[in-house]
Structures are given as C-alpha cells and as structure tokens.
Length: 367
Image (cartoon, rainbow, N blue to C red; front, side, top):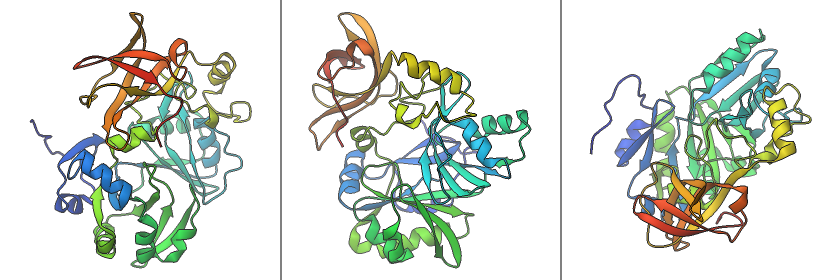
C-alpha cells in the first residue's frame, strides 16, 4: 500500500511520539494533521473501547478562537442554535451553516468567557469562513487558531483514570460542561465530552510542552485499568449514530436533513447568516434525511464512496458509512434516504462494491 509522504503541510501532533510508541497501524488526514485510525485492529480496538479506557490523540480537532467584544455576536452569526442562554463553562454542539443553510461544520462551541470562545471543529477549513465573516461585518473580534491540542480519554473506566491524575473533582463535571484542572502547574480545560457513546473526557492542552508528560502520566496511572492508546472507532460511532462531517454530511445538506433540526432555533437565533434559508426548510420540511440502516449478509467492505440505495429500480438515497458490528451481529450503516422510503421497517436495496444487498431502515441507531 502507498504511504503518506511527510511534509510541513501534514502536521504531527504533540502526542505523536506516544501514538507511535503505542503501535499505531493507520492514519487518516484530518484538518491537515495526522489522526490515528487503528492500533491493534478496528474490531479489537472496538471491544477494548467498550470495556476499558483509551487515550485518543485528537489534536486534529483544531480550535477556532473568537476573542473580543463582538465574540458572542460572531458566534451567533455562525449557527442557528440560540446561544443566548449559554454560560461560561458550557459546551454546545452547534451546526455551522452558510447563507443557503448548508452545513459547513458540526463543531462543539466552548464558552470560556463572554468575550472568548473556542470552536472545536470537524474536518474543514472553517477558520477562513469565520475570518471572512468577521472582516466583512467589521466586527471587533480577533479570530485565530490557538495552539490547543485536545486529548480524549474515552471508555467506561475513564472517570477512574482521570480522577487519578486530576483529582476526584473531575467526576463532578456534567455532560457537555468543562472545568479547569491543574497538571504540572498549568490550568487545563477538561470537558465531559468525546466522539464515542462510551463516556469520557476531552482535555484541551494549550501548547505542547506538557503534552507527552500528560500522556505518560495517564498511561502510567491506568495500567491496572487496562488503558491503551485508541482512536475514534468506525464501528462504535455508526452504532451510536455519530455523524462524520465530510462523510455523512457536506455543505449540500441542511441540519434538518442531517437529523440536527433540534439544534436549530431559527425563530430565536437572531443574526444567524443562514436563518432565512433554514426558516423555509423548517416550514417545508426536508425531503431526505439521515437514517440508520441494517444491511443483510456477511461483513460489508470498506465504505470509501457513496453506495446507492434503490427501491423498485429507483435511486432513493445513499449509504455513507457502514461496518460489521460484532456486538449486534449485523452490518450497521448510516445513509441519507428520501422521505418516500425513510420510515422504519422499509426494505431497500444497497449497491455495495461486492454487489446488491437488502437492507432495512431502522427507527433508531443501535446505542
């Protein structure tokens, strides 16, 4: 298999030494950085994630920082979610849309203060869109990418591991909230969040000086907890219905098509750039939407392109992510399906690289 050639355009992370020592077997490129994709095997990593605790180098979740008097105004211009009630210390999942209502990103907004925010982004060059909006509207705000590298601690034993390094106070952090905790004399924002359904935390490490010390401290403290290096797991994220920007949705999709309508307060999110377009969508309703699909047969091949979904010979959607689930003994998938065929129990035909298979639309995801 061809290898990725290293260059300064493809950035290592402050945790790369630890990732390599842990035996990483595969990477993808995410926000111009290395993101591990497998250590032992996708299936072994999957079982371990569900039973123990893992450290994930997710430095590729780059931050877009908004700082200044107009920071809150700019943040509201970017998303149809009403942020007026958001307090410092909270994290909100926020669809970011353009003027047509198309999805540009689905990050987590971290409110550090009234005049300081981080946007923890998925894979896209959102920084330039935000800079353009700030300059175009002449807002009094600094928009930049700070030197912040998140490290995720995920799995059912994550509370125990984090408490050993940061103290029992981390146990009190509520879901999608964060607090400040000290490590080697530095304050770090620690949030109860992460890209899995197994529970855990994300540590926002500013600067790289203490990164490997933190990695090593967590690894040492978690030996008896069976801590391993890990990464976002394809199987587990599909089971949980965790969408991947660029895979399951793009700027051709609205939040309503992606099942994210509950995060769109279009009547009250005054100032959102895509508000007028989304008001029309909310009134008319989407004609296609993300659905969970169960695909028959043995394990499906890797889904590196869209697979057509057909019914009666007509194209009614596509599958964007799919994998064999060992726990549920079936192929789990995420697809965009037209309203004529999106009801639970509807049978459709999936055209994967190894041929046609039957599939059933599910009412909900598996976990």
